[in-house]
Amino acid sequence: MPDGRVGKLSMTIDTAMVFAAGLGTRMRPVTNSLPKPLVAIGGRAMLDHMLDRLAEAGVARAIVNVHHLADQIEAHLKDRKVPRVVVSDERDRLLDQGGGIKKVLPLLQGCDFFICNTDAVWTEGPQSALAAMQDAWDPAKMDVLLLVASTAASIGVDWPGDFHMDADGRLTKRGEQEVAAFVYAGVGIIKSSLFENVREDVFRLAPYFFDAARQGRLFGVRLGGTWLHVGTPAAIEEAERAYARSTA
Image (cartoon, rainbow, N blue to C red; front, side, top):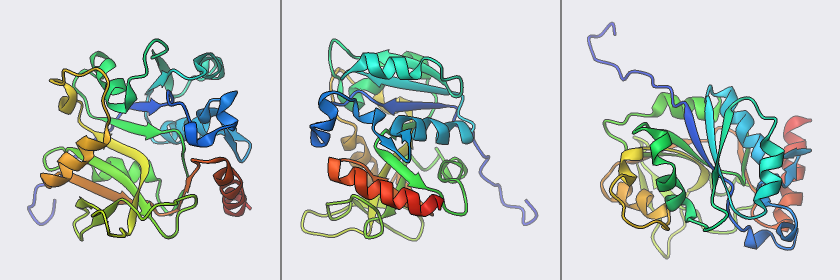
């Protein structure tokens, strides 16, 4: 660098863990017969929206876990070429997100990776959100990097936000009686080493975010576009309208 400082090397995250195993209870009755990842927004399944974003960001491999109505998801994915899909079968036992990661640790081979919820759909801003995350990722000071969006401007957010963010991008958890300006937008980058010594097989992912926050190692990248949280049947219609406006 011209001023003599040592710059952070840009890193390519080439694997993503895509969470598609959930029961989608808040989306019932839609999810009684259709898995939530296959709910369509703008004529395209939410799972495809996510996989398309990953492909555009140069992610080569997506590990997709399945449980609820797993046959439908596997059939939907069978012709997908980019990214290359590896199915993690949780039909016998739903492992929650943390457990789902632990199950595929041998595939991750100690590398950092994207984590992706399938109900996270967004419109892009000036820069690709995933490209911005790749650029921002710094494992020397971060254990977790989350994509965050404006709580007030997001579609389908019916809670008072998740995180506060300082000028350096460091995130802290919202207090119980607080309102936070930023909401977790369902995508992150995380270190696989965080899960290597976990004994449990079924466990949640969120505590890892909060633990990283307590250590000052949880950071955020703000989404430049609009986040569409499609968590309930009513949110489908909201998201459809917002998506149509963004593509008009």
